[in-house]
Length: 327
Figure 1 (cartoon, rainbow, N blue to C red):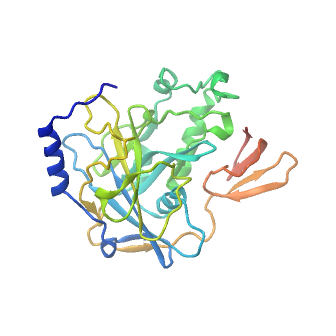
Figure 2: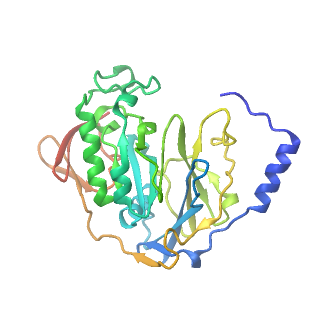
Figure 3: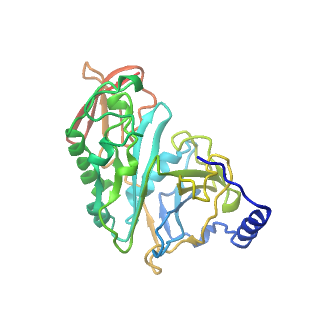
């Protein structure tokens, strides 16, 4: 990537724009809450949209919990997605650091967005940037097996399941194959539809993660992944999709600089709506992990395998069973 030269005039213009458009999250304006408890946090999502498409702004959800066990950034966004009618996420277990957030969708009807979402298997399988091999294991990268054409069926099974959970758990992950398929650029909407927003990527763009207090301009680029960030009271977790190309003004994703945030959107698609969404008392699709001898190791819903010792395991989720290997 070529270095970007910013003139003094350009720097002053950027500073002026930032100073004019400074926003702070206001708790009493948040209409869509997930959970219950005396502690609170906010999730902010900002999309990259094409020219001519209305930008929904910095969309805000609220999150509540209680107790001393702090949720992670991963568990918070999963809980919110599961309980929100207008949010869906694509996430993948990529290794010992946990899950990455690879795609976010926002729509007045998430079910229709999922119906409009496709995975371009041919494009992904011929993309030279992707080291995961769908047909022959790339052992140099630690890949231990390959899904073949069945990988496409597995992905569409995950999409079908997300109609209920609003979480797309990418099945071609580190736990199952020893190396994940970083193919998120090829998860695309088949057609442009009003009221549907979707960004996903790894090489052409990515979801950058910011944490901090309520002043959006003071948010800092997170040095940890969402599985490793513990949420604290009055904390803001913000995600912005950033393009990765020479013409983009947003090439400072790893510098720690906060991007230009848009005006917070508290009302979403319905300015009259206000709701508190209570977490499900039990997981919708529990994941049960067994040892080879049939004994249960753990039951959870998030897809994390952070605490497993090296070895083989059997993972059962709903009616799906697969064998995984942890190094």
